Image (tube, rainbow, N blue to C red; front, side, top):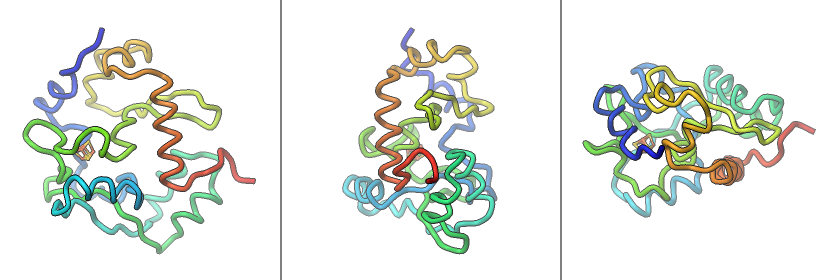
Length: 176
Ligand code: SF4
């Protein structure tokens, strides 16, 4: 059954998937130039981004998201280079997180946010980014129920993941 308020209920109990534990900012997903431009069109004065060093922890996290694509990940995010991520408050909250959830229109949100908690593996299989404390996952133990609760379809997830890969520059499914 569709549950449009599950994220709001989760946010009320906190912390939400729009918050990081202070000190772990480096593991935040990257925001591509394409995504940044779309966000800035909606929130030009937001200051909601931070330039982040490609640390070993960040690169390891990217390799977990894209296993088998070590060469591509290292080329896009070379050690010592930088990328943009979402800026967070001193308490770890995304600066786009308002009292009633994300202040950005859905279509302008980072693709990772729009996909969450879904992901897609190299074979196109939909997987879950399991996060402790996610009420939607706690209340919907099968992927089918979770799709319904969050009001998304498998084809939408695959489409969004394809858009994310293009935006981030991960253009193939495996290193040559
Ligand atoms: S951009 Fe919006 S959806 Fe994404 S982490 Fe920030 S508040 Fe949450």
